[in-house]
Length: 116
Length: 421
Image (cartoon, rainbow over all chains, first blue to last red; front, side, top):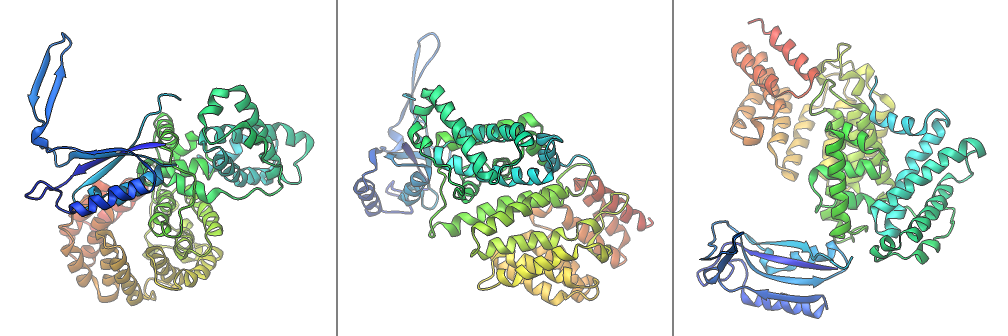
């Protein structure tokens, strides 16, 4: 069963990286996910200042605005999709993720199975 | 007393056709059957459906044909047949249960003894991914075999609310695939406290109902004890399970003395200790040393406190220094202002009211205690003993505001009247 791990960055260090872990932690985690054969996909997102929001009104008019900005404490910083037998296994991978440390958090969501 | 949710569970379902012995069989077998089937199907809904169907079949056949030699095996065989029928009829549903095929269901033998999978079900129902308010409900529903309206009554919420809560929780189990498994030895220290917390919250809801006309609902507390006994049989080596069972027994033993004939609450100081349940106290006392073998957990320590109360002939002869020492241990294990309130009350008994009051007043800034009735009641009691009548009245009034049940209110109003102001 596929689960998406949504990685919310907590406090951010001066260089834009998460404060509680370093690049090597992420490299190790990424390798572990792939070595275990559970990796489906995963990306790290570019800095939030590069984000743009699009909305389409009922009349079809398109609005494009800069942002959103980090008004809430948690900002989506990246994700993994893993294929594991059950929620406990997904929660284990989430707990091992460097993004779960300190002020960060990982939200685990089952990927909807539209075929069933 | 009427309105017993558990009593009606068995009585209502069975009617008068079969006797109490058979009721006991259903109460015991319901959880075992459901657990075994949930494990095999990986689906709680199907397991519940065929468990109910098997029990209904028993209600039809047993009064006529007699109770079979092995009622559990009969129920299991019947439930299995019902499951095969159901999955043959509904191939789409069968396909959805990716783990299960009709073949594997038919392969289930008519073994006289099927394995006890209830431990898995305890962990699934208490899974941390489920909402707090659903865990106790699911545990009562699945392991104690209460119907949804009975569970609703147990938690004093409307049946429709409870039904929705249970449906949502079961949906999450199914769709997020919360597994039916016993956590490994490495995970157990993190997961077991969650299961114990669920049982203890069922017990405390029975011990002091959060709202309502009655102070305690002894049937609910008894149900929590029954579940704790099952859990202890499944995890005999876990000292905190033993500690929890001991704590429940030692507290529940005082149930008859806790309520006056007019229904009002009677504090420990004023209870007629002759009305305590001596056999239940003995059983609890035997468990305490087992629970304390090795580093003590919070339930074992609380059981030891309850044991000291139960062993004492009166409040005056209670070993208060030892109780204070145990609360000191408990504070290091689970630091909480509520534990600190209990410790302060014990200090007041050991060293006198002024010492206790100093400790309580030091806690008055705690956010969690502001709406905690026992804190204000304990403070009022010490103020009264020190002759600070108007301060005591104010504290009793505050406690009265926060009291959830009528018996607590009757008790507090009486204390307020005794102040004669």
